[in-house]
Length: 178
Image (cartoon, rainbow, N blue to C red; front, side, top):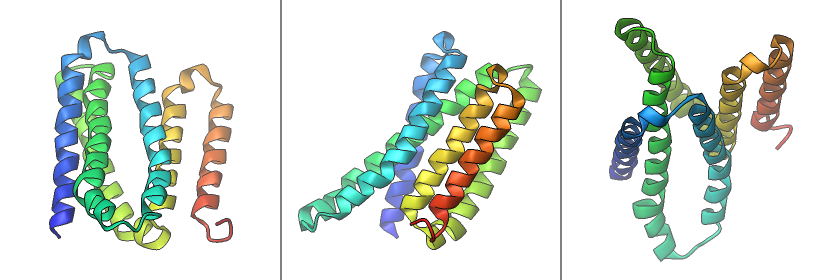
């Protein structure tokens, strides 16, 4: 259980570092910064399973110990930093007034975190495994990116791409495809 504590603590450190960095550079950030950050989150989500598979190929006891004490906590810090940077930037870009912005952003964050934590930890990872779930989360972020840039894409095309990505996600998670 102490390793789970290390991973959670590492993620929280990443959240703090990401939000501190973004708050210090927030003045020069804009909508394209959010899109670039979303691309970074997608890349991280899609590349993570390949890195996990690569690490799992080694049977060296030193590397196994190093992964649980250093490599995976660092990966958790990186994930937390990306997520931590996203929140202040989204708050800035969707600012209307303090009450409405705080209410909308915080409620969306808490609802998404709660549903995501329950679904991912209790259902998706035990059923599908971390590799498939990580790729699926990357695809969910692609849908989020499409919604972000949708103002330049016709609505029908947005629906088409969203459906296509959801279908690809279904194929990844289904046992028939793997």
